[in-house]
Image 1: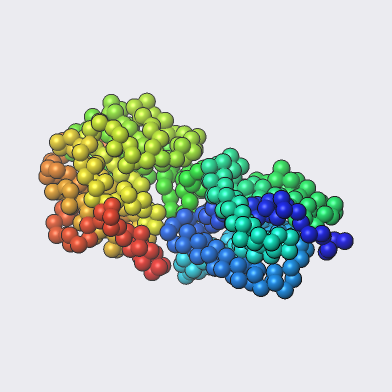
Image 2: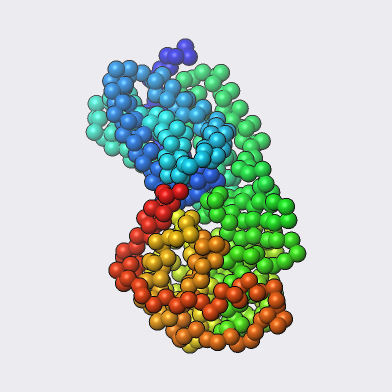
Length: 488
């Protein structure tokens, strides 16, 4: 009978515990990619996901134990597995529809939306998977006397499954298949398990349907202007095109990491400003930390074709996307795939100009915004070298700027700032020597740079609060960014 399967075998119960633990962690890892195209991957988004999963497990363990005592039957256990499998099979399409609606809710902040989304999409399946362990243990107790040993076996195999479910999506399935097919893969495994547990041949139709969906599945487009999107081990990457302008977005749909305008390299945005630094401070070797689509490197290469430029980008898929859509490759550009801090720790080279462009409000990599990191960068500057940091934020007046300035000032005796992008970006320039006079007036040959030159010389930062210096041990930048962001 469909609803009265026999008591499962020892191996099937262990497999059920294993695949439940694997699927649970895979869903938690994959949840960030499901939400990333709409809300980014900030600390708040991860907090929402982890909080919802922990709540779901607590509910699952509690009510799973109560239900197992009342209905100690295999049909309930495999009914839970079946339900989660179906949920995961439809999750990509349901989430796409739901999150697209949430994205257009006015005056709503990302934390609230990500928390509500995570609750709706992930609380039910994670709660059901949390109920599996008490059920498996209860069915064990009906067949075995040594319950302690069996409980140990159960939790061991479930934890091994969770371990695999943590690493497999992040290192294999998401980079190779994408988040959509990763979700369908685990839906297939759960539905196969349910069909075996029920011993009903008709249920095998469901995993077959999932296989067909898997074969035809394509990553959805979040924006009608999207011309390309892909995933990597690090990011959800999207290229949009509007009119004659192309945009690169990485995770956060509200942020633009690079742009390309038809017929010009200039962006009329903060990326243009580094191009004039070498007119003030002669530069033979430049280093760009956070290469992205290559706006800074392309402008430097254009105005200074003899300059030796090294660009560091942690995500190779971002680099490949930039080569394809943003003309990243230049004759004097050497591209390195590495973390910015790791690169500086492992190189002995020194530079005349280092441009740091890896910050964006809630996506600040805090290990690249500390006193120790700035000290490391200073060691790689030549005597009159310039260290430039771009800080982006959602408000024209952000408390983040005070903390960046204080931290830079703790290492560099001379720190300057320029408001760009109507105040939504602040360009910090840090030096061991005072700001120099203009080496060559660029306006003679390059009048198109007039809008940038008008901001020079930059304003010196003199008074800072040393209590705001950020270190590797104490760094509150993400918390500060979240407070700014909650004002939206």
